[in-house]
Image 1 (spheres, each protein chain N blue to C red):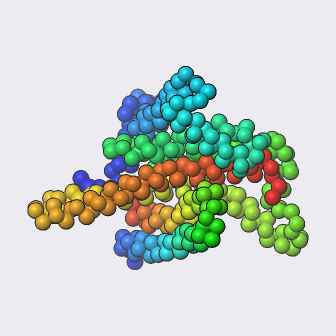
Image 2 (image 1 turned 90 degrees about the horizontal axis):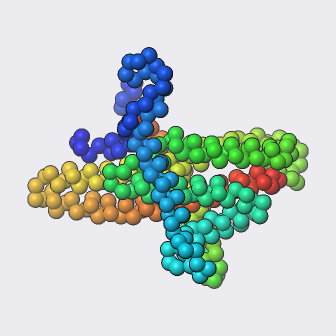
Image 3 (image 1 turned 120 degrees about the vertical axis):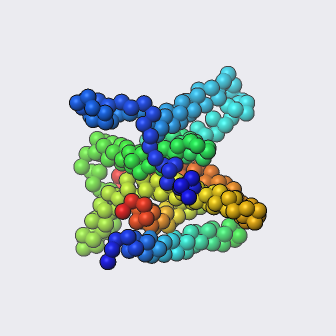
Length: 75
Length: 257
């Protein structure tokens, strides 16, 4: 097995990890919207937590993209 | 395709080569050259200092518009730090504000065409993250001594579960610099590479005659959307770095869960 084509296959498989990150991000926003539509006056106070939770969850999707980039360009 | 290479933007070039020691031949000795990365770090610091020194102006009690923007930025970070780390945590306000301002302005400078993005290199973000973790660890041990280890043993847990929880807590503490640095690095790197790939499509399609010009509108629109997203990511990543720093400082200042 040569390393050249295995790298491209590995990079393709690594992008599957973003599915989990996408589910996580949609979870955060859907729960925020559900709560905000039940209690609209409390929603603006939680937007800070919303953005923070979104960024921390999206980081995991970026980690899997990073693995793909490392496979393509570094190793 | 050489002109549309998305990796070329991250190459570090020596602007003023400075080598210490060595034996006189070119390229020997310790490389402390002034690179394009160093140039944009200096530009970031100069921009922030000039803005924070010049914006208040006459320091009116009721601020005018420009003074208001610098006061807004100050209050934003001060409120965030106070709510995360309490009144004792406000000792770290200059540190957290400097981190937030540096990362925000460095990310925003990277959005200008032909400018180098300082935070798109893992060594830069890793240095920032190690600085944060070093401050947290050294301050925690200096202030609380060995009681700092209570951070890894939350209260109210029976002994058998503690045997499992403590290694997990230690590993999650040790992974903080890695996640902090890779989050910022990965977001900025991924955004810039994606942007260059899509705008490279515009160039490639534009070279293909009249029908190519018609089709090149689509990657151009995507490039505009990605640029807007990149501005958002630049601000959000700076905010998230500052918030996580405040939470880790809270662990140092109040080390019991």
